[in-house]
Length: 192
Image (cartoon, rainbow, N blue to C red; front, side, top):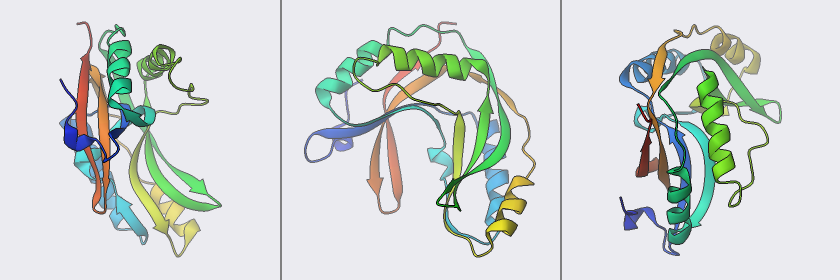
């Protein structure tokens, strides 16, 4: 699969990352949770359902030659299908204000796969200092009552849906005013 030229910026660079996409059952649960989040009072944006993913490694702006090296190194990773599940809901703060609402993803396989990706790309990119498998479901710009908002969010029940991870992807991200547009650059499948 070749790089889509539209994925590259004017200077020939592509903003790229390695991630896991989700099946419909997971997406439907996230949609249910986002519906509950939308009933709270906040200024911000829910993650578009088609853009939901777990970032295993953000690569930043890279050129076509680097993409080819990354594709080659990632193709050396051999793994079996593994199980993961949705965990608790949480909030990341910046300067004391809630900024990101997320759902934790649980499963040793996620961490093993992320570590192997880090190892394979270690001579090209800095290793992750601390990886927490999470799915960003909302970005918050402003809340009037921080305490009330956080109480409501943290009480949202999450169905502990179990699902299979059968592969991962190298993707590009084109930032637009309306939100990012993601494109698959390469797909890596489990051995089974």
